[in-house]
Length: 138
Image 1: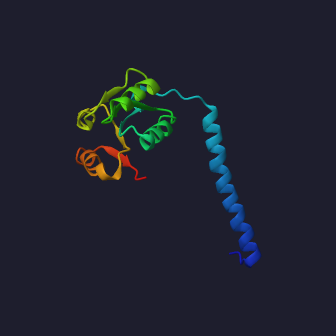
Image 2: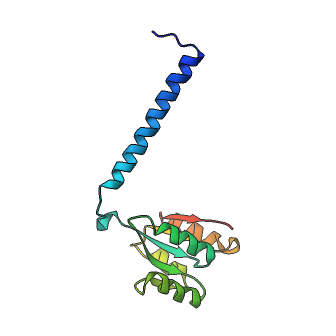
Image 3: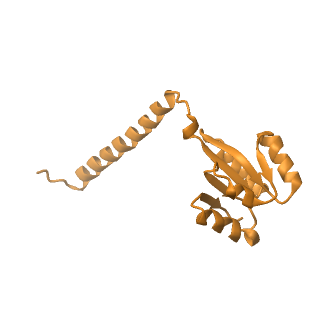
């Protein structure tokens, strides 16, 4: 059994930490080198409830992840729904009633970008339907 003084312990600990960090970094770098096709089953289909500034920003970030696709948007303003179609294409389902989105079986996750005064119902409904949802207060 080795006996370490303070200096020896710090050298061994830093070497182990550096090795562990470099190993994960190298693995992550080599994983990006191999192109991977995303199968239809690997795609996560998301919906947005509340297409204002916060909701749009969160959605733009989410769809940059490979395998994430926006399929539906709900908002109470027709202008925001039209803008959503301009940004993400005419095949996006838009509605003024968020319950239509929550009733769809093809949606895996819901981003909720409504103001805090109207957030309780859209947040609690996906939870009761066993869906992933995320909400953010400004």
